[in-house]
Length: 162
Length: 162
Image (cartoon, rainbow over all chains, first blue to last red; front, side, top):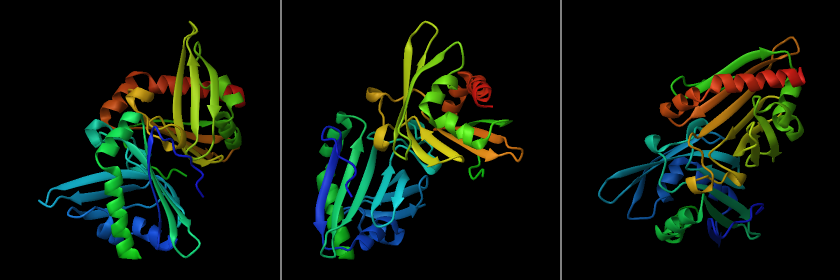
């Protein structure tokens, strides 16, 4: 179901086969009660998650540092194809409204594709793609620790849902 | 079918009942061969239009000044609901990839909703909503002549399709 071919100059990819059923991967990504349990690599945590799960629906996930500082991240869902594909972006909020620096735009805009494919043994072939506007955005995201961070979060998803 | 309630601080709205059937309004907005005939108010014209009509599909509409200078505008379709609703944005390109200043982001990002509702007499209640990130974006778009420009283009659509 990998209809999208990543662009190595602009995209970052985390790909792994995990022993978690597609339906449970989907639940982990879309149920706020589950999201708060795995989404942010320890020792940080997820303070809260709000999800309006429809194309054009907004999301707010608030991460919390070990010192208790909170960092809300807002976004907008673009594709909601249950148990198969979730696409969302950081560059828009509720109802596809663009964000700007004055209303919460991030330094490093990206769109994420969470691709969920049955692996044949009851598990999931999982592919997460972060798409950036330009190669500088990809490099900054990589230097911020994309692979370590998204990988550690996925470890937590597997521990919770596997 | 106006599921969306415009925000007067952030949005600009052009609303009119026109003697053009919904199916023909939809065709005018989505068929490149028709788009080039009405999309840009005279004495400017539309040099070309490329349309990949699906959520995540890109569009490029190139406007041409009376002096022959060309100005391409790229965007991405978000909602494609034939004869009813077309939503697209200027802040992303093909496959929902964000744009940045280095790859074509505009000064004034917006998302547009083209709402097409049967008017009961074979015509269309037409509502176009331009959604901005902040009130400054709305004001700049208004000062650039949103109502005059989108209104003149709609006059051309009616003359072509009515």
